[in-house]
Length: 560
Image (cartoon, rainbow, N blue to C red; front, side, top):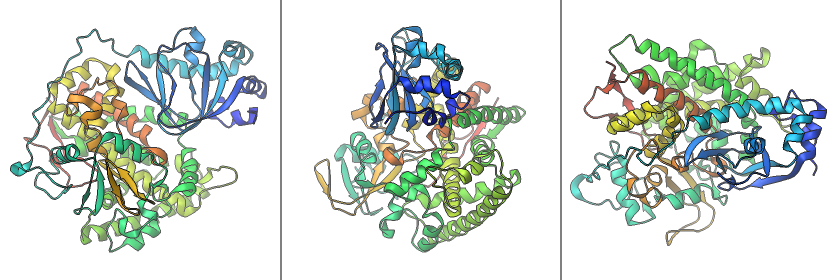
């Protein structure tokens, strides 16, 4: 089906172009491609003969193995090499299934000369990508090496037989518990969480993308849900319409509508806002001798970003943070009756609050993502009020604490590898890659879950149909089969660090990944550079006793 000017005008990139401009571009479109997740769209150093416009999905760009950034719908791929006539400077890999317009390369410059508005639109992307490449470090073979730490000793000296988060010391170091399990077998059944646990990178990577599996356990068997049982009916009524609890076409519909508001322009504006908030928080900390990084820095940043992004009343941020903090406990595979009741009350309060804000936005629209969600449309389809409420709750629950934990986990582990702080401080070109390595080394999301609709074989073991399958993301990210002998070492300059599985995969690949990366890139490197003599004010970190989301409870530091 031929690409029309109207198809291109739907993309934010071309919104200021004329019909004549877009007609030039549409004539250059050779094909509409469906690119599977994991495929390389273009490779570093290859000769360029085409370029692409992203319609759906996202891709990661890397150079010399280091992560550069994420390419989102409405952006383009591969035009730089066509412009200067040189081999490609980056490799671009599909991180989700993608839809691309593929355009011929030989008429690229001619098309820009005929359509100057298109050239201006692309210049913004040129400048951003050139700056990213220019900042990359050039290693001479003397890149600092991090010595491997001794392998932790399992408590009691016994090798575990199954995954059990109730063992002494698990929350302080889950990797010393699950690592031996990973070496014993690719999969085993855990009675402690009533689930099959998959531990190795290759299997976790494959199964997180397996379309035959249900990606949301919340819409299958209620006995396999992640929350407690006492108030399951209430939870399902509130969040049943969240895209994380839907499968198949229902999930795809919700994801497409929500994805429409996460445009490249919106992400860019959030980066500017994140930079300003970080500078403000660091400025306030500079007047002190010490601070708790979690409460004074890591938590305020994502809460403020997501609240402003959604256009929530500024005076209600603390209440929203408290609600979502309580609700994250319900993500664990076990929960006490008291925690269940608290989560139920928090969920109902948040659900009702969002309903009122949605009603206010319908009467008085704003320049914010919540207003955009209200008006998001695809082929005449829109989100209903309960769907909007559910997606906003999901954004808060999944968006604020995971990012805060990513910042906290990152700094905690940089303290364990102090030479890596020196490497990061010395080279801003490593900022993006360092965040990917932090995600790999100690992911705030330790597990994701699937349900198989037919018998499934993993590592020679047959998992019966209808089973709850727990994919151990944290274990996969430390698998030496993938990461080699330094799997348990933090290396901010690690090539291929972005190949971690911390964001899941397939159709349930974390939609907020670009925002989490953006916020952490704005926060963590600036923090360690602003306070070069910062040191931990604790003997051992205090970890939250949560299975699914991993993070420190407090992170006290001495600043000078």
